[in-house]
Image 1 (tube, rainbow, N blue to C red):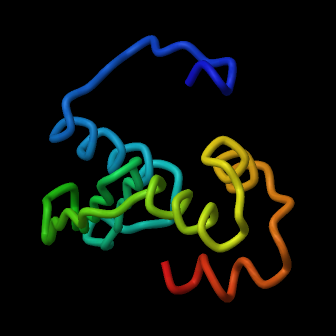
Image 2 (image 1 turned 180 degrees about the vertical axis):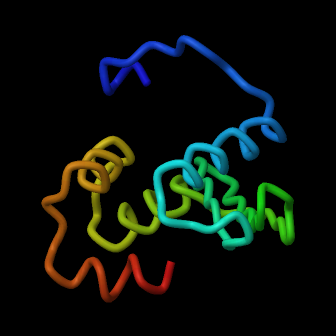
Amino acid sequence: LELGGLQAKVMDVEAFAVENAYALVASELPVSIDGVVALVDIGATMTTLNVLRGGRSLYSREQVFGGKQLTDEIMRRYGLSYEEAGLAKRQGGLPESYEMEVLEPF
């Protein structure tokens, strides 16, 4: 947050955050009350997938991989430091082959 010049005003526990995210998505997209919505949270070391219909959870899975593993692969592949790889991941500047060779398999 600080890197982006932002400050947290509200914090939420994960279960409520998913429900609140669904409510926001449902209000912004042309999804019917029975429409299916997938919410993906890619954290540093954990990726969570939640599939909801009508605000109720249909499917939820956590996978032990996230942005840190992608940064590590960028470091390894292109010989960058952790800081350089993280910056390149967020701001661009990686070789044209990055998407096909690194991002898609990730």
